[in-house]
Length: 177
Image (cartoon, rainbow, N blue to C red; front, top):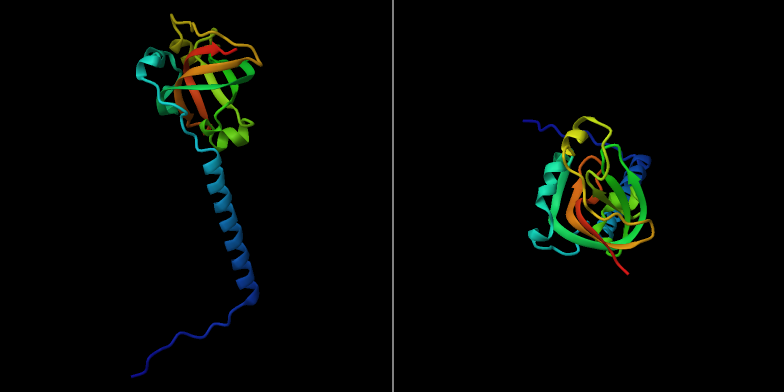
């Protein structure tokens, strides 16, 4: 009885070097990703009682399914970097947060380390489903100015379409002195 043996393969040094390089690059990327997750974990700074946030605002959030709730109610302090009135009727604030832990990697890389804050139905939407969400409702949240230090209270979520974290909907914005 003869036992067949596998043919001997000669090791290609160029292939081995390329494999080692690929392994080093993948290991470096994994280490960078791990460090980024530690630096920007995307955690709520404080869990507030549900009564501190207006749960009724969710009835007026346009396409609420795109938001993954991390915390039903939290508060974040920071400085307002910019204000933008979206076509969906929401006022979008960019907040430079005091607590970097609220940011995730997408906030850090795509939003210049800012947290999105959305005041829903702040103005009349351009139309469509957003207009239906704001029917018979206008926000009463105080609107800060760029440069103001504020405390924002609201739901802390991840926007699944963009991947970044937000306070959306914002229940209130207090100007800090």
